[in-house]
Amino acid sequence: MSEIFWQRLDRAARSITPFGLTLFLVILSVVPMRIPGYAEIAPVLALMAVYHWAIYRPNLMPLWSIFVLGVLQDLLSGVPLGLYILVFLTVYGVVLSQRRFFAGRSFLLYWLGFGIMAFCAAVESWALASLWHLSLLNFKTVFFQFLLSMGIFPFVAWVFLRWQQALLGPDQDVS
Amino acid sequence: MEQRPSALLRLAAPLRSLVQRFMYLGLIAAAFGLMLVGKIDALLIDRMRAEVTNAVAPIVTALSQPLATISEAIVAVKGLSTIREENIRLTQENANLKQWLLVARKLQAENVALHALLSSVDDRKPRYITARVVAGTRGAFANSFVINAGSGDNVRKGQAVLNDQGFVGRVSVVAKHSARVLLANDINSRVPIIIENTRTRGILAGSNTNRPKLIHLPPNARVTTSERVVTSGHGGVFPPGLPVGVVASVNDGGVEVKLFANYYKMEFVRVADYGLSGFVDTSAVAPGAGGKVEKRR
Image (cartoon, rainbow over all chains, first blue to last red; front, side, top):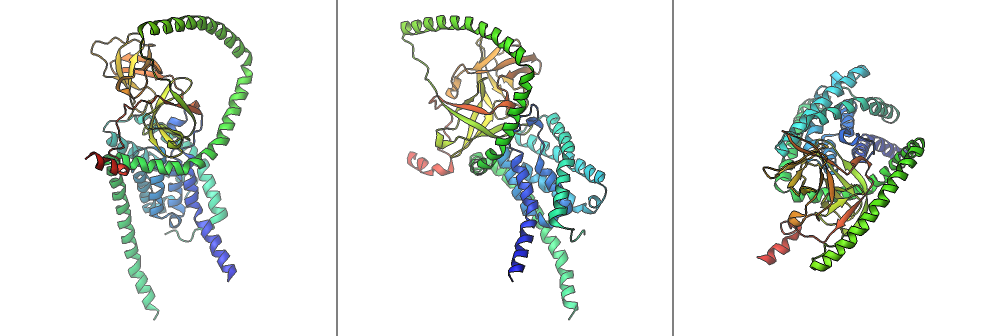
């Protein structure tokens, strides 16, 4: 009886870690880094998490949790509320519908997939923010932000892949 | 008997995907709705922002501490290699500054005497609240940061924020123990300025880049590069004379200003309380202050 209880607790604790990790990245992205030139093009770290978990464990990252993470990202970073909610939801939706294309292939393809999604996200966020302010914002900053995201992604992805192997076990369904 | 669950499943699967699709569209619509709410009632969203930031601020502060230590260590090690040149430079600068000190003392005495002669009204002396920068966002979409002092520490909306280099921005949202500072280069920032030597008035407008622009300059204003730009005090929001930056470039695209304040290095800032109340009183329209509105009617 108690063994089953502990097993359940253990499984529950493990299965909320994708959300917890993403939440951590949302908070980490607003911590001032004090590296010259970094802050202007600091990547949206949570986007990497949304992409990764949408491919590998969408059942542990339901839609509403993506929404909540988007709200937090918007409120903490000071951008117009709704901006990153829409970006996260778009990335999640597109990746989920194209999951077979991304999952289980080579790391390079997985990285390339992130590149495509991150670029779309950059364009989308730029368009939304420009619409919100009713003036064309500087796309150059957004583009460099995208490039930096591409560079940082392998490190974050490596942590995620190891995490999922160590704590979450094999995927139940890739359908 | 075995047919029933599978039939149910066959029915349940499309139903589930249908519900999910509706939920997806619903959430997207909700996000657009929130954007609209933000456009219509910015104060409501600001208060939400303040509360959420206030709740997360301790975590962010804890995370920022080790990072600050690391960057301090890097700076210290870097400084070791240039310690001799730095010493020579500082000695020279000190000699220069001592001469300036003599000039300044003389001017101050003269100024006091003239003030007394004309019986002019003194500017108010500010009270400073020093706070640590705990979170920040820069970039194309927003330029603001969060400090760990709030309404509990007498920080009020609209107060000027300075560091040792000059004007940084203004307090835009205040919670109990934290406040958000809108930087001078944010697209929503407008600061009344004056060019120090020529006394040309204008507005410093942020554009989410490193170089905010001067707008609303008089038609025939002559502005040249490397002129100092300071706050003008017009509108009664900021006190006059705070150093803002220097004119970096003048061309057809407008006049661009390089700010004195170096944002990436900023660890501590001072919130200046000058007791000015020229800022638009938002408490009257805030939902929380309904009672006040009733009274006025």
